[in-house]
Image (tube, rainbow, N blue to C red; front, top):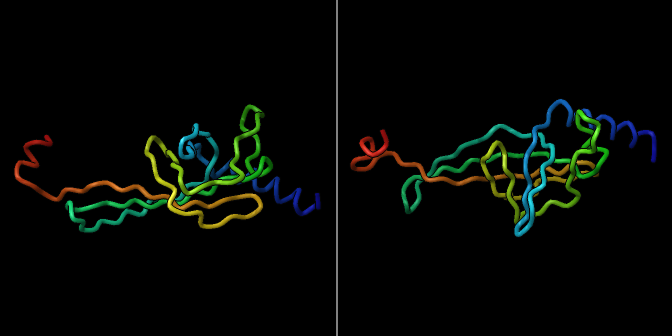
Length: 133
């Protein structure tokens, strides 16, 4: 391994120490894996749909692809990493599940995933305020 690779791996692990939060990546039909991820802020779009108004929440997460990039946790144990993410999966952040919409980019150490979550948004309907006190 070249000196640059060793230094970069150490720096990548420090990024995970300071910027990452725990998320759960669950492939379609598989078991979930908890791993560190750098999470972007949510961008929320609202649009008209045939069934009313629809909210779309978009986020990006950066996850480690190698053990060196994932680093060690506070107890000295190896953190989980994901070498090959897939688009038919979900990522759970603080109890909220997002579908993996796309793999935005991949480097030797990290993968950036685009996530989306759709939900209905009601502006009003007869009895809305009475039913939701």
